[in-house]
Image 1 (cartoon, rainbow, N blue to C red):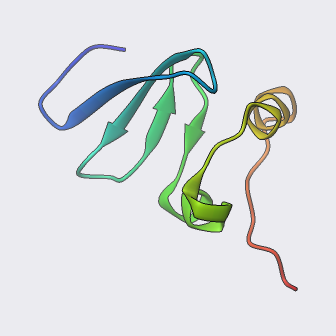
Image 2 (image 1 turned 60 degrees about the horizontal axis):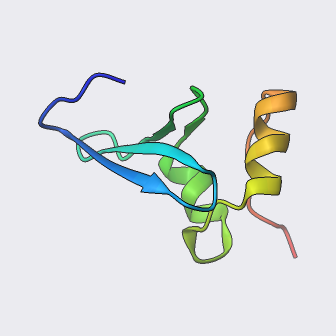
Image 3 (image 1 turned 90 degrees about the vertical axis):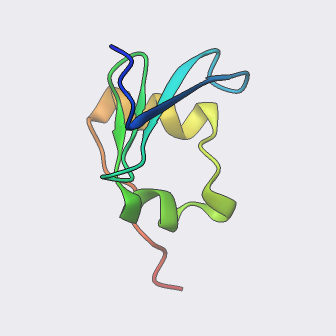
Length: 69
């Protein structure tokens, strides 16, 4: 991930990798190239990406959806 001004980078202890947040698009991208859209982040409880969820999203190239319950 190249570092540019619209990006904020942190190291996620949960995922054990670098995570980038784009302040313009509100997209979160992980070092292993998994992207989370603003809608996906909103669908997560407290906006937290767990390791299990991340692995599933990566393996299945999935999308996080809001619960209908």
